[in-house]
Image (cartoon, rainbow, N blue to C red; front, side, top):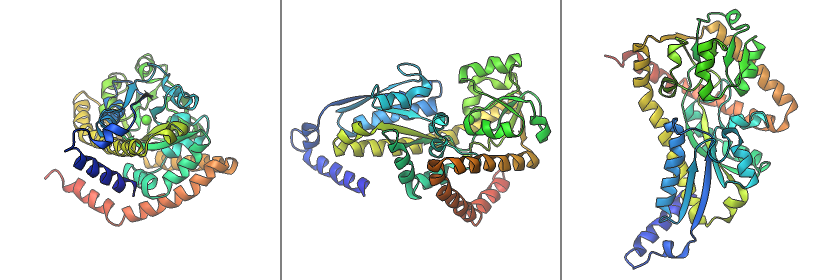
Length: 361
Ligand code: CA
C-alpha cells in the first residue's frame, strides 16, 4: 500500500511540475546522511548496492536527501557499523547482519543460516512471509529498522589446498569460515578461523590455514585463491543465499518526511533486486575463467553434506533451547522453509533440472 501511495504522490508532483517550482521540491527539507558500509569498494556488487541506493534516493527527492557512502574502515570499522548506527555516529549502515552473530545468533535470519533459504525464498520470507515483522521486532531491541539490501545467491563452499572426501578429512582442518558455520564445523572437528578478506590469501599461501570460504566465482577470482588452493568446493551449505540489509537508526527514520521514507523503501527494494541480477549475470563467466586457470571444481560428498546438515540443526536447536528471541524466529522460519521446499519440488525444481540438462543443446 505504501508503494501505491508513493506512486500517487510522484504523479501529483509530476503534474505540478508544469508550474515553476514543483511542490515536492519546494516544501521538503534538505537532509544529509552518512552511510557506513561493511564492505570494501573492490566488492563492487555489494558495495555498489549502497551507492545505487544513495543515487536513487537523491533522484527521487530532487537532490534534497543526500546519503554519502563510506567504505568499510573509512569512518567506521567494517564490523562496527551497527554500533555506529546505534550511537548515532552515522544514520544508516549497509551490512551482512550475520556479522553480529556474536551479539545474538538471531541476526543470522536477516542474512544467512546454514541450510536456510535460497535467495528467492529469503526475499519471499522477509517481504511476504512474516520475516520483516519478526526481524523488525528483534531489531527494536537495537533501536534500528531493517530494509532489504541485496543478495549474493548461493555461495561456493570455498577453496581447499587438498581434496576433502569424508568427514574424517575435515578433522583438524584449519578453515577461514565465520559465525554460525564455524560453530557447526567445530562439531565435526574442523578448526574455524576468523580472518578478514585481505588477509586470507597470505594465510592460505603460507599454509597457516588449509581452506577458506569467501563468496563465489565473481568475488573469489579477484582475491586469487585459486593460485594457492586449487580445489573449489560446492555448495556453501552455510549460505544457500546471503542477504544484505540497510539498517537505519529508529529515531532518524521516524524523523524523516514520509516522502523520504518512501524514497528509501523504493531505492532499497531496487538495489536488492539489482545485486542478485549482477551476481547471476557475472558468475558464469568468472567460473569459466577460473576453470581455464586450472581450478578443480568439486562437490561436497553426500556423507559430508548429511553430517553437516545434522550438526547444523543440532546447533540451531541448542540455540533455540536457550535463546527465546532466536526461537521466536526459528520456529515460523522452519515452517516457511518446509512449505517453500515442498512447493519448489512441484515445479521450480523439476523445471530447473530439465533446463540444466538440456540447456547446452
Ligand atoms: Ca561466505
